[in-house]
Length: 77
Image (cartoon, rainbow, N blue to C red; front, top):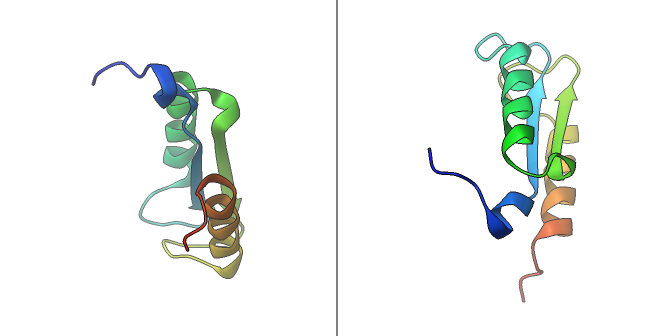
């Protein structure tokens, strides 16, 4: 519940959601991403939806996660 300040306001966030998720409706994902954007730099928040994906994952999502990690984390030797 503390305030977000300093470098934490610049943290990159990737949020992924299937548009057919029966457990966590897409509406809740959309509300969550809007809350995140109000707490940190909205330019650093990425919200991806995947057509037909239920409460699971898909190859497109995993590719997006890999790209996000490659972009924001240093390589491991």
